Length: 314
Ligand SMILES: Nc1ncnc2c1ncn2[C@@H]1O[C@H](COP(=O)(O)OP(=O)(O)OP(=O)(O)O)[C@@H](O)[C@H]1O
Image (cartoon, rainbow, N blue to C red):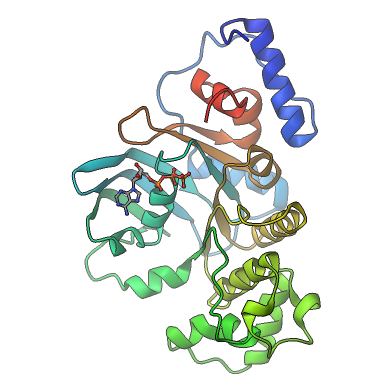
């Protein structure tokens, strides 16, 4: 189908949005005004959008901001000039074809990129206005405030369910008064309590894949993160477990900022408030467009975004 045919193109976009959300999308008939520059949403846009939906933003937190981020592996430039805002109380999906730098970008957000010996970066990542890459910043504290859930569930196999949830506290040498209360609250927030409350001393490895992933989410929650980064958290899971994790993401987003990398357009549309579309045209990955998820799926400014969300490539 021709992508330059306006009528067909609009029909395709309407179809895409109704496929991914079950709703009819409203399509702008005129794309001539589309800007060629990268669109980013400001913290105030995010805040006001979210305020309208769920009330006041979380006190004491201004969120996470990436400013002009570049990344390299050795001499290979893999990310170019990425700026995005992630406000508390919102979910942002990062989408784009394989290899465009989504995982590298979220690893930069909690200083995991520097684990790789050839990795380098430029730019700023601000957490509540302070650069996490400033000299003297305690990296362990950043990783406690900005937690991460990976593609493959990775509970500690030789630890019980209870030990897994509380393991982050032990590693960070945080002492707490009432471990059992915290254990229950984390497992409840991760949507796993009812399934494991009578099995807390069994090994984490005895759980199903979906349960293991929710155990990993509970483990992240125990150290009370402000931001949760999720790198394709459902790609190894069946559809039922995927929906359960998506419900958990929506529930958790009331109290933190969540950034989720996903190849699943339906998932991006179901769980996120904002979406960023990344693309590499052979060179470094760039943020082609970001905005509200509804705008990205129903009325993208860039043709490449439209082509990607319509499944024409990637
Ligand atoms: N450890 C590494 N060493 C060298 N190059 C790497 C390394 N990790 C990633 N890259 C390269 O960096 C680029 C971005 O990779 P990245 O994994 O961030 O992309 P992605 O969009 O998350 O891909 P996918 O959707 O397949 O997970 C790719 O060209 C990849 O080959």
